[in-house]
Amino acid sequence: MTNEALIAEARKVVQNIGRDAEAGVTLDMLPKVQAVDAVVVYFTSDEHDGKIEVFLERESGKFITAGLMPPKAKQST
Image 1 (cartoon, rainbow, N blue to C red):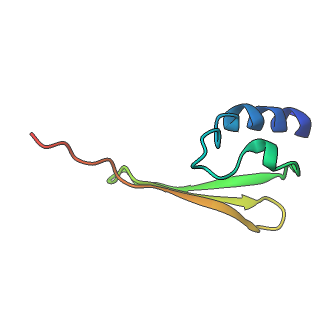
Image 2: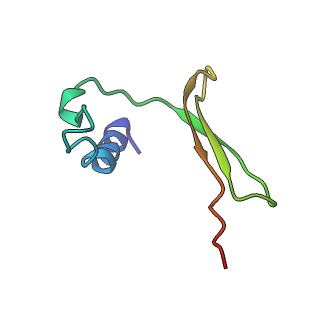
């Protein structure tokens, strides 16, 4: 995909983020847009269902963002 197509897809994903007053920011407030070549590194385990993901610029390795998905809460029986 071209950078323009990727940016269009990203806009679709985030179009509803920040529509409420509590968010404090909307897509319209952020006019500067750039696309970077990135890689996502996932840390997972067969024994645990939690996951950590780290986004890095592919060429430089510069940190972009990271996310933690904690294990799902066990349901009581």
